[in-house]
Length: 154
Image (cartoon, rainbow, N blue to C red):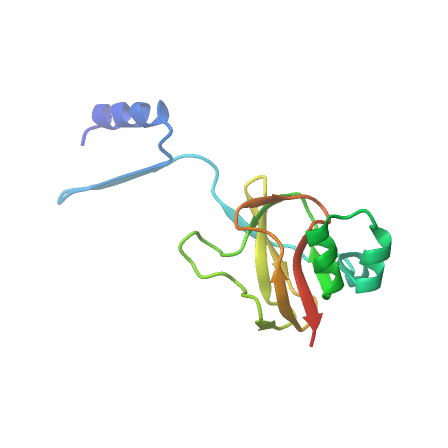
């Protein structure tokens, strides 16, 4: 492919929503990618007392919560979102979830990802625990402090 054809190809791609284009034939291979590169960043959550609220503290701190939130708080401690973003249970759409209900996780194990501004923030367990409930659906928006998981310390 000569430079004139290559320039035309790049122009055509930039005028569309295509983010990746690949051409491979017996003579040459061309790959064009657009947009920011997705980055994965590990985020250390602040001290456990801020995000792992015991049953009594959650119940007394928010007496006007909805029935599902109150039921989640009554059955164990919660792991809350440290940031605003989108909740993802797995590293990729076709990958297995990081954790399932009933699973025992170790300290430092990744529980989920919260994407904020195209940055993938891995949320890790601060201690060994059992997942009792997953409070959010995959790709659901979360706010700061929203409960992500109900857990029991092991």
